[in-house]
Length: 312
Image (tube, rainbow, N blue to C red):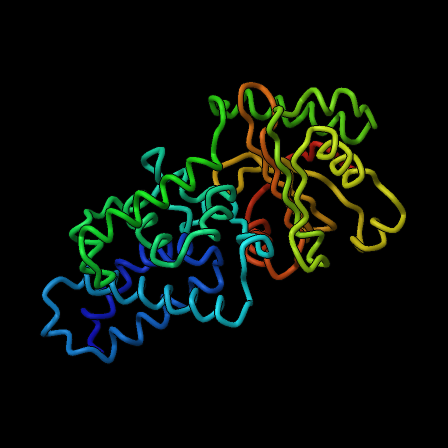
C-alpha cells in the first residue's frame, strides 16, 4: 500500500475508533474493529472508492455490527450482564465532544442503555446522535431505507429517554462537592446523610468486581446506601485483595466524575457518578480487571494529584 493511502486512513483512525467504541462499548474491541477496517482498506480497489471517509465508515460500522450480533448469538454479552469499558478524560475514543448529544452518547449510563437496543437501533442512534449523519447517509451505511433509519432512531431515542429521566445536570464544581460529601458519608458510616444525598429514583449498577455472573442493580435510596456503605467500608480482606495500600482519587471518566481506586500505581476500580439537582442520581461501579486495562494505562501517564482518601 502506498504511503498516501496509509496517511488517508490514519487521518480518520481516531474518528473510526470513537465510532467503534460507542458501538461496542469496549476500547479493545474497537481497536480490533479499526484494524480490521484497515485490512479491508488495504485490500480494496481504492481507485473505485469515490468517498473514502464514507467507505471507511460503512466498513467499520458493519464490522462492529457483525461483532455485536456474533457476541449476542454466543450469549457473551446480554443486557443486564455487561458494563462498558470506562475511559479516562482525554482519551481520543471519547471524541467528538462538541455538542451535548455527543458528550451524552459516551457516558457509561447511555452506553449501558444502548446494550438494550438491537444492533441496528444502536448503530442508527450512534451515527445520528454522536456523528450527525443524515438519515440518507445512515441508510447508505447500513443498507436500509431512510424510513427504516428514522424508525430505528425514534425507537432508540424513546427507549434511551425513558431511562434517562433526570433533573438538571450539575456543573463540575457542584458535582465534585456532592461526590466529596457522598464519599465522606460513605466512609464514615453516616447512612442517614448518605440516603439524603441520593435522588428518589437513584440507581446503582456494579459488576461485583468482575466476580458476579450478572450485574448487581440497586434501585431504592436505602438499598443503594446500604450497597455503597458496604462497598466503601475498608476491611482486611479487601485490603488483601487490593494487594497494596489503596488510595481514592477523583477524575472524570466517560464525561462524568468518578472515584478511581488505585492500589500502589495500579487502577483496581472505578465508580462513575451522575449528579442531578445536588444529589447523586446514578452510580456505575467497575472493578473487573479486563475492563480497566485502558484506564489503567492512561492513569500511568498522568499526574493524578492528591487523593481524596489517601489511606483506605
